[in-house]
Image (cartoon, rainbow, N blue to C red; front, side):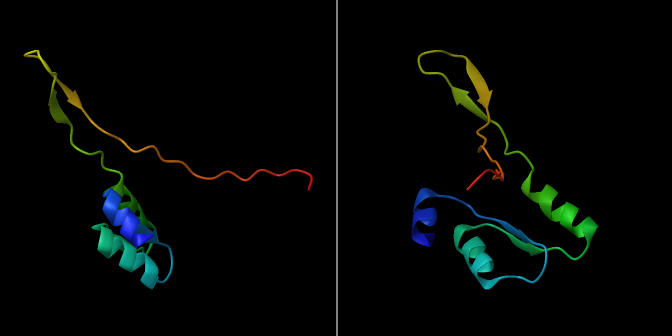
Length: 87
């Protein structure tokens, strides 16, 4: 639900292939994400690439030492697969 997304700090962005859907716009706006409707194949490419830029890496100090390391947090993503079988 929307309050749980906001409470967890999740940012939701949406790219629509046809008409804009109000629910997608509301979720994107409320969570600080971006909603876009592609106009053609080049615009779709721009919208998708705008969401796939990796986040900047940050310096993380190791406790008790003078050394530091660059880290970058990524979110695992995946797409559902369709499996067929006997019912």
